[in-house]
Length: 422
Image 1 (cartoon, helix red, strand yellow):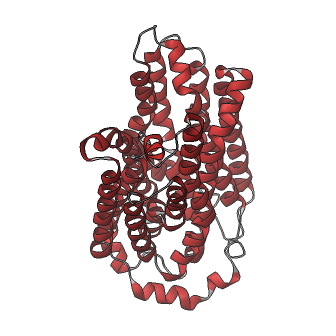
Image 2 (spheres, rainbow, N blue to C red):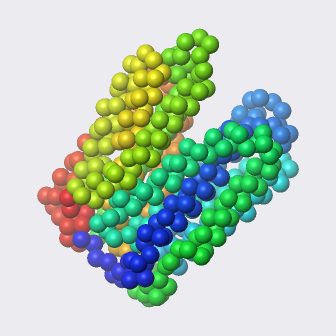
Image 3 (cartoon, helix red, strand yellow):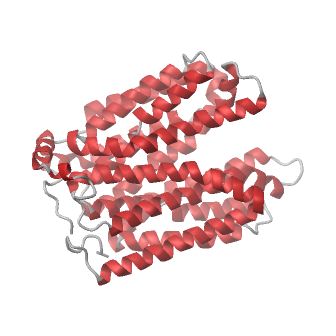
C-alpha cells in the first residue's frame, strides 16, 4: 500500500471526520443548487440583458453555461495542489466565499458580456464540491472512504436535481436578479458552516509542508502511475458517455410521447430518474466497494451501464425509458466514488489533492465534450446510434479496466500492493 507519510488523518481529523463529511455534504448540496438553478431561466436573463435575436440568445446562453466548466477544468489541478500544501479547509473557504460574491454580482450584470465574465470567474474561483471530495477522501479512514465519498456524492446529485426545480419557480416569485442574490446568500451559509464547523489539523499541514514531498512534482511522487492514469481516463469517459445522451433526450422523448402529450414533463422525469437512483444507491454501493474492492465495482458498474444503454435504443414508451434510466442511475452511483477511492489508495498523501484535481478536470472535460459529440452523432447518424456508441464506449472502458487490474495483480506496483489490491 502507498505509504501515508505524513499521515493524512491525524487524531484531530479522525475524531471529526464524520462531522466534516456532513458539513461538506451540506455545502456541496447548497452550492450545486445555487450553480444549477439558473439553467431554466438563463436564456430569459440573457434576453433581459439586451440580447434580442433568438439565435443569439441560444448562443450566448450556451457560452455563459459552458465557460464555467471550461474554467473549472483548467484550474482544478491548481486548487488541488494548493490544498495539499496549505490545507483543504482553506480551499473550501475560498471557494464558498468566492462563489457567494460572484453569484450575487450576477444579479448586478448590465449586459451579457459582464454575465459571461462572471460565469468565467465562477469557474475560476469556485470548486467547492471538488474541494470537498479532496478533504473527505483525505480525512476518512481508508476502509470507509468509498462509503464516505458515496455519501458526499448525494449532495452533488441532489443539488443538481433540486437546483433546476428551484430555478423554475423562484424567478416568478422574487424576480430574475433577486434569484441570484438568493443563490449568493445560500452559498454564504455554506461559507459560514465551513468556517466554523470543519476541523483540520494545522500541525499536520505544517508537517506536510516541511516534508518537501510536493516539491518533486505531483507525478514524480507517484510510485505507480498505471491505476491513476486508468482512473483519470475512466472519469473522463464516464462523464463523456453520460452527458452525450443529454442533447437528444427531449427530442427522443418527443418520438415516444403521443401527440399532445407532456413532452417537457416526461423529459424531466427521464433526466431525473438516473439522478434519483444515484442518490438512493451511492452510499450503499460505496459500502460495497469498501467491502469487495473498488476495482470490481468500477468494472461491474461500467459493464452494467453498457448493457442498460442498449434497450434504451429500442423503447416504445417514455415510461420504459424512465425505468431504464433509473436502473442505469443505480449503476452510475458507484463509479465516481470508487474512482476517487482508487486514486486515494494509489498515491501518497502529499499529492492526493493535486491528483484528485486532475480527476475533476477530466470530469469537466467529459461534461464539455460529451454533449457536443452526442449531438453531432445524433444529428448525423440518428438518435439511436448515440445509445449504441455510448454503450460500446462504456463496455470498452470495462474491458480496459479489467485488463489493467489483471496486469496490476500479476505485476505488483513498486510501492507494494496498494494499486493492485482487491
